[in-house]
Length: 130
Image (cartoon, rainbow, N blue to C red; front, side, top):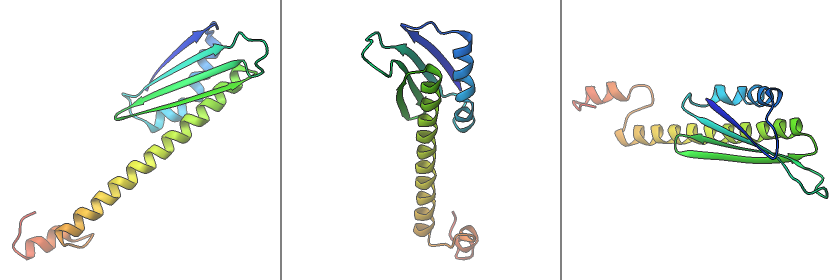
């Protein structure tokens, strides 16, 4: 997974960059190598806003785009919460894909008329080709 870190009204130091990479390491193991994660760190200039440190992430996967935004008084806390949000979304997306794949497999087996384990053997015994 490729990670791009940008800053708006904030200088992206090596420590912040390392914090982003280490937090999103778990997400990187669950998605494709071709996925792209864009993280934008910013600071609200308005002094009346309590949660001034804002972190936004956009994860581009094949066919879907996941997005999250978190704000808190500290940037590292915003990054941590952002990583948890994206992780939760990736997990939900993977479960939906697996459920769809399983449902398609079950439907295709019932259409063929075979059992789960011997659909190919049953078709051959009946003289049909799969």
